[in-house]
Length: 147
Image 1 (cartoon, helix red, strand yellow):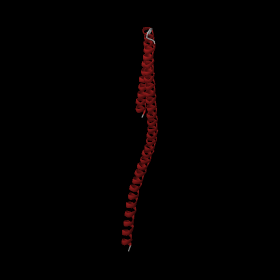
Image 2 (tube, helix red, strand yellow):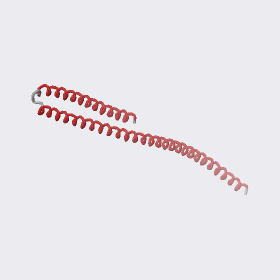
Image 3 (tube, rainbow, N blue to C red):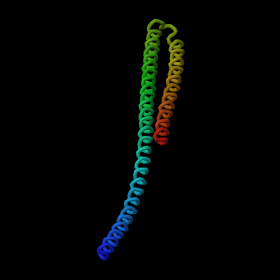
Image 4 (cartoon, rainbow, N blue to C red):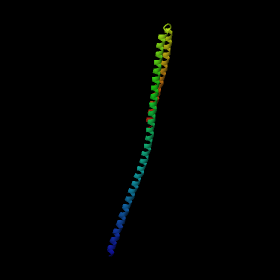
């Protein structure tokens, strides 16, 4: 019986040692899992932050597109108005020619000078429109770069 008890004690000691080894392995695995879990949570937080930044960037892009569309409409309206003004002035020139044949040369020269002034104004507005388009393009590039 004593030998059997010694064998059982020895076997029990071996099991306890094996259990301790397994406990250490489990502890290492748990620590590893905890580290991976922390990294995962960190990545998730980073992903949420990136999603928020993307939403902000998308909103800014929509706003910029809206402003660009608005500028394009303004440019088109200015162009249409100036074309209408030019047609009106051309009509005025024709009316002056027909109604005042005696001093047509003087009146025609005056009308031409006026038309050149309008062309200069049109050119100035077209230059301003080009500057606005360039500014919108630069803002778009800056926004793209900041993203």
